[in-house]
Image (tube, rainbow, N blue to C red):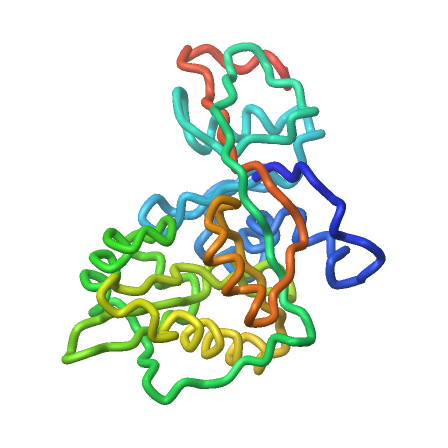
Length: 250
């Protein structure tokens, strides 16, 4: 996740919270450390939990070997900032534009009486809904990252939302999905506010990421009380295919 724009940070201490500059590393070295694979320089979630991975810093010469040890040769890893020069054999992929949204004082969570907590037994339905609604990555054990809730109609899961990254003091709301036949009923808003309620109850703030092109969703989240913090470039690098070591930290 590469940050490309800082115009919206202003002097607001919420917008300026440094853990939001690298929420994946904060989560993997904090609340989600029990799920993390890797070491002091590079970490990731298990492949069936989340595709997110991060490094402590790109300034340490040993980071390249740490990433290579973690993901192997010819594998993808979240890209460093454009200003970071890649070692020989590492290749950047094409990034896509995204946004990071954070709560404002206008965001007031509220529990929803119809929301049911989802868990392991609900995974097949959750995966099916995600496949149809395309809210972003959701894998067989993503539910381990936090609290996921849904709404059922005639026993069938038709809407869901939940918690993903947990950087210090924050919770990312993710997997906001509604069955096409049940859109326009406000189900997504209700579930987001239910998740927000539980986040705020434990003294944390809510945040979100979205594709910059998903303008309808961004307008919805802004209407609920989120605001833009940063524009991002979501991109990856591919590690060298060669079995030789990275000639950086030796």
